[in-house]
Image (cartoon, rainbow, N blue to C red):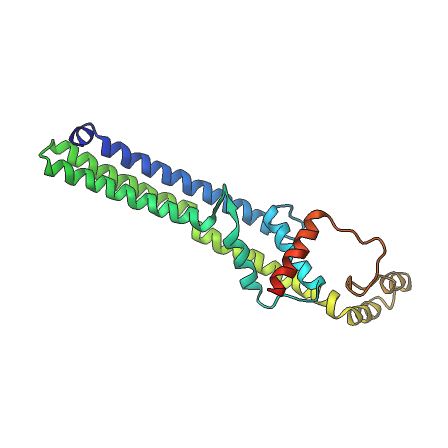
Length: 232
């Protein structure tokens, strides 16, 4: 142990932990940035999470269940989203744990060097590495803005589902007749377009018997998953 401290082992470990935390939070910030870009065009995004949210949301209305609390719906899927097998919150917790370990390693190395009566330069280097490394981490935290990115992602998804998708699905599913009458009134000065609008089939897949209705394996899995959740 004494030889490890004498050879600046604690300093190297502290520096390694600081570098690992900066890289880990950089990966997390990049992930949030990618998710925000996908959420900004959620209606057409092919991102796995955005497609899953749209399909689950759509299926709830096709099954006449609806979504009462959109905020909880979104939070659930954000909490369960995984990157390299770990949830986003877990990655954030790991980053904070690395910061704590780097502080303890730098301080512990300095205290151990003082207790063992080793060179004062070793004490200074251990303290300096811990302070400088964690100061650098705080600078990158300000640059990465992970809490702000997380909040922005949540707001973008909520805005689309609550203010765009939900009203559309509710009208198509529960108020199809009202929508048809509105369209007829809106296009009354354009007979050709009125005929096209009136002849559009109402979106009611549970009542309409379409002979060629087929689902992909992914869609079937989503429907079964929603039914299982609803039936408890």
